[in-house]
Image 1 (tube, rainbow over the protein chains, first blue to last red):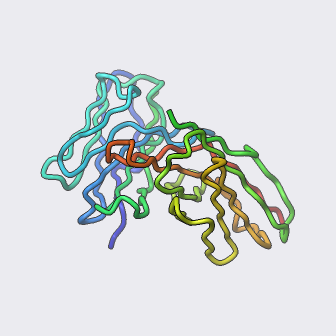
Image 2: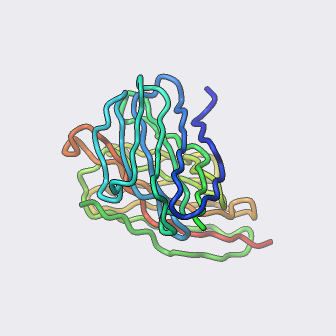
Amino acid sequence: DTGVSQDPRHKITKRGQNVTFRCDPISEHNRLYWYRQTLGQGPEFLTYFQNEAQLEKSRLLSDRFSAERPKGSFSTLEIQRTEQGDSAMYLCASRPIRSGNTIYFGEGSWLTVV
Amino acid sequence: KQEVTQIPAALSVPEGENLVLNCSFTDSAIYNLQWFRQDPGKGLTSLLLIQSSQREQTSGRLNASLDKSSGRSTLYIAASQPGDSATYLCAVNPGAASGGSYIPTFGRGTSLIVHP
């Protein structure tokens, strides 16, 4: 069990550029979550996948954000036309099929938009 | 909509003290509650998971209690050490009314500093 892996760990981009983050969940975890966290705040829910199906999206996920989970394995979160307000840590988490089990988080991907 | 509040927001104590961190939630129809630790710039590490049917869970110097009916959980840290310095977050997992998504809702966390 290698844990939830996120890449890149840090990304600095200019305003208006597109960025993509990747998450590799723990194998056989069918539930995958994306959260966003800013300094001094708790993680805020963005979107949720069960296998390859994106079942829930937060209103925080504007039309500039898109997430995919092809084949129900890894997931990508893309932000188009980045804005300074997008600067945050993007956290991915996964959970096995038994809902009562622990949710496991990756180390996060830090985004700084300059 | 579930709201999770953590008190205090920040805490600074000398080494050796016993601590109580509080978490309250507005909707008592929860599946379980989880406590996490987060070091600066890092992801979240799970500390304890309490199912809705349980009253408490213990791991080493940590003890978490749950009073579902009153919407409260506490994390007790015994004999605190400088290595315990971190932010502690609680997350509430919704029950069946969530439609099966079980999306955790987080509090803002308690930032703990234990000084030697």
